[in-house]
Length: 151
Figure (spheres, one colour):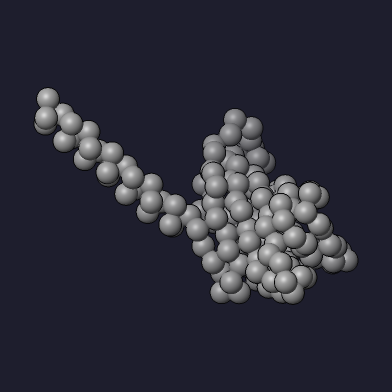
């Protein structure tokens, strides 16, 4: 009986350690200081361009007056402004400002040339769901990369 309790505690400790390491790896800060935390990554039944797909949900935080690096996503993104203000400029479209409570859509492969918190005093927090092929390793691609879906 005592041995089972010990094994049970050991398994629980290993699971907790693994979860902690997983969460630490899921949080990233870019060179510009933009903080991205993966909240979930779920394989979905629907296909994306005929491929098995996944939906990854992230929380993005930008400190006051902070900008993110120019980038692209390998699938469409659906974004909710959770806190603060956010300026977004995609492709050759004019830069738009979104406030907390607003949503927006980002097409597959579009260039995020502007990704900025315009406020000098408050944080910006966004919740984004990006649909992408299951075999995609990164959902944020450097601006100069053109993925297979953007053409």
